[in-house]
Amino acid sequence: MLRRAFMFGCMIFVSANLAHSQDGKPKQLAARVELHQINTLTISDQQFLAGDESGKPTQLTGQLRIAQGSGRLPVVVLLHGSGGMGANIEMWSNELNALGISTFAIDGFTGRGITATNTNQALLGRLNFVLDVYRSLEILGKHSRVDPSRIALMGFSRGGQGALYASVLRFHKMWNKSGVDLAAYVPFYPDCSTTYATDSNAADRPIRIFHGTPDDYNPVASCKRFVERLKAAGKDVVLTEYPNAQHAFDNPLIGVASVVAKDNQTVRKCTLQEEGTGVIVEASSKQPFTYKDPCVELNPHVGYDADATAAAKEAVKVFFKDLFKLGQG
Image 1 (cartoon, one colour):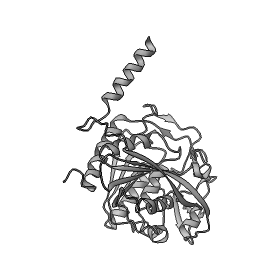
Image 2 (cartoon, rainbow, N blue to C red; image 1 turned 180 degrees about the vertical axis):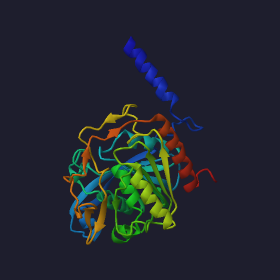
Image 3 (cartoon, rainbow, N blue to C red; image 1 turned 60 degrees about the vertical axis):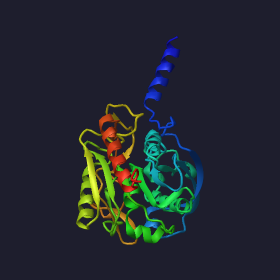
Image 4 (cartoon, helix red, strand yellow; image 1 turned 135 degrees about the horizontal axis):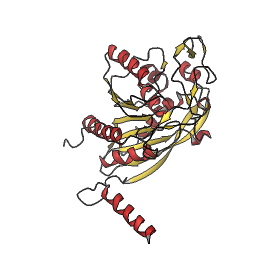
């Protein structure tokens, strides 16, 4: 009896939290879901930075959720973090689909035989996600239900880093062969500890970063420094900082209390920079960086923050409505 009452209560809760269109259809539900094969490469960061295409051919999967609506629709490409395709990817897909925005979630791990990189970030070069995005644009730019002029990028943690550095024009010129330019870049709590050559020469498109003040996984301080360099270069960049938000604050399956992400690696004490032919060095030692370096630490914190999530949802919705000119006839 208790089980039945619990299930009934859950049904009421879910029903109450689904937005409905005028015809009664839940707007969060995609009108169609497609799985697309992404032909990309698995390469080291040094190969990426050198424009070396001799990496391992790799096939990934992207989930295209076509929102309710007709004709060519705007799309937001979603990049997951070090834990893989988590609950926040699904949550944001629902939120964006409800606005009439399709989503394309890239699974950057499964096709590479990876489940997660939290405890071993050396399993995959950080810049692979940037290449994966560019390869995905080759698919989206030709899709009959996608408006190629209205494709934006949004990522989280490792994916947030990918979303941030995908804006670098040097990387576009080397790797983006799609002919499609992204309309905006929206990184959530990215790692900004690496300075790449000419990385402030970014695309002249909006960059909107969302971060938490107490984040000790990817500290916001390094992102503030990068934002100042972008602003000095005349770029349209805004950093929104939430005072109580831990890392992964928008993942509803993480407990509300701050918890230790056991054995997860963080480069919060590292200062990394590109030198020479695409070599990333640790600034203090001037030696090529590895995840065995003393600056790499373990056990940062994560935690869900309902207030920050609600505020970020509202800010993102307002931003995309304006960017994509939704509801403007």
